[in-house]
Image (tube, rainbow, N blue to C red; front, side, top):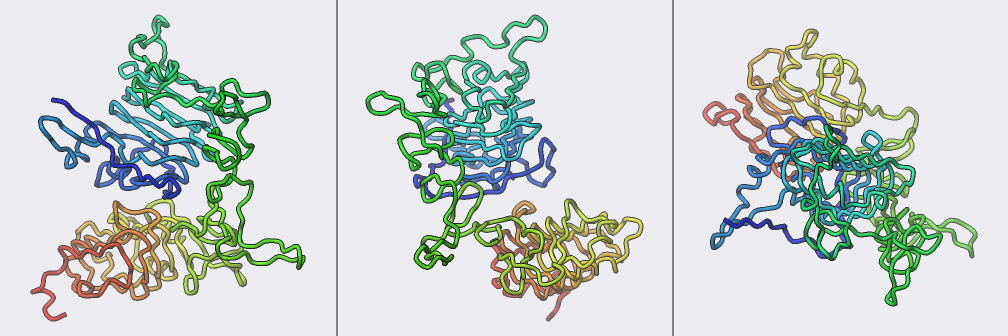
Length: 502
């Protein structure tokens, strides 16, 4: 049976960008009710710029086949299915590192990735590939790993023969002092090459440098025979080599800052520039700073100059940020996205790196904002020292940047909440991180009779679900449109005959 892989069509409008936050899990296993592969697909479908790290970890062939089974079709004896990691097809830039770790499938492909900036590194590396069962890792448009080293290691049963033999890693290094570490290329017993020549043959178009056997797998080389003093160059119509502009990163296709493959500093309306316009300019005639016209204003964000800051970022002057600087805060009652100077002591922002336990709950006093997720899970109510009154420490919370999850496990316990009035001042759940696809989860609370979320105004991302709360009557008939949520689900709560006319 002939099997063909298909991609969804790539967005032809290359000027359009979708920014997606990366992750910082490293090589850790992520436990969720869905496979990690499915979670990756939901995170990164249609993304073009990863603001952070792209971590592809702990994925098996079975995970991929199970997740994509419903997209497999048979036409005239030919089976068509999605390529593994199809959802990465539009990714062009990673601001942090790329990690490929414990992935088991024949091919991983990032067909349009051009640059890895390495602003964050994994064990000193901008590109780290280790402990996989991969035959091909195809990144034919990758031009540069700007910062950090490159590590490639594979198992003898699945050697990365093309990466070992037909990729010029020195060409990819943006930092000439960065280390390149290649492990597993030779047999540890006799030192012989673990790959046979027929395992890494390039197409004739590729001049010996490629990520695989196809003519579309050629490595793009842009520093060959450049004039003296050029960091990168291009070949003109008459065959002459010309230097790329100084604002270019990863080479160029022609003269000037508008022909760069990527930008060293900032991309403003398709042109590489040292600084974005910002919101103001110097008026020479008046000798003073004046506001720019609206169509001229550009905010700084990562390596881009934008007319508006992306969702899930805050606005601090001319910058798009993920948190306000010291001495600044956001007033959720006026403009929850704008950082302004504090008038006196700043409202307290509390970082919550994991689910709540008794000790952490005791520390969350007078917090206006929770930076992270607010997870009250079943084991909390069983911990020594837990008392329901501790939940009142959360009454001051107005913003949660991630998701809120209150889970009673479906097990009756008099110490579990009968309502959520301890969150009565919560106004916004931003959903920068989601539990599967939800930013608000209330489930398995056998004692819950009402919600009490009287000030909740908005779920900035994700859905809300109220599930398996056997005494919960109130809430189902509310018009939840005011939350502007992607959806609200009430399932298996109190039955109609229990609720009566409530």
